[in-house]
Length: 203
Ligand code: GAR
Image 1 (cartoon, rainbow, N blue to C red):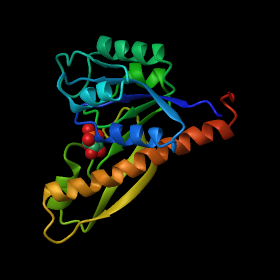
Image 2 (image 1 turned 90 degrees about the vertical axis):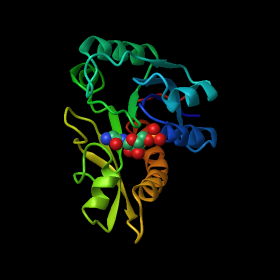
Image 3 (image 1 turned 120 degrees about the horizontal axis):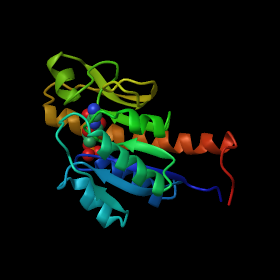
Image 4 (image 1 turned 90 degrees about the horizontal axis):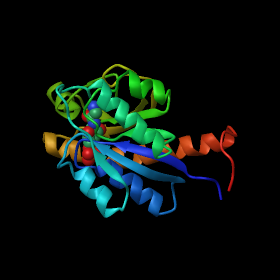
């Protein structure tokens, strides 16, 4: 049995992508383990889900900025992820920009899921942006994280059709369903590549 890839999941919202990762792991179709969930929102659904799945979780202080963590709080996040043995950081609805402490501690080992076909529609509520622009095709993206907002090398995308009569809510729901397949797929691929690259032992 190959050793599982150790994940740290950061999220600010309801946690449906975290749920999808846990479902895939529990189904035996993703060789990974989530060792820590971190949120910046005390009542975020992802924290309740972590509790339900018995995954260690913590909430960090939101601090004085809206779009990023204060450097010392981000340094604490790094320390906690490292203490938890995290190999891959997954941003699953984490609504803050990641800065130097995390980027330097986990080079090319932070991925993000975003609800558009990047580079189109970075930022907030991307599905509303796509709808307002009259797109007939949108989707979701998993990408490596750099210092920009929803920039960074694209790993994989999944297309979602915009249907006549779509509302923001109906479109977002279909994009999220696509995310729930895409994100675990990408993590599974990264876990597999780690073994074929010979960077991890077998147990
Ligand atoms: C997801 O749709 C994700 O793509 C988005 O937040 C949602 C979180 O949902 N992230 C961004 O917009 C990042 N720019 P979840 O909490 O149910 O997983």
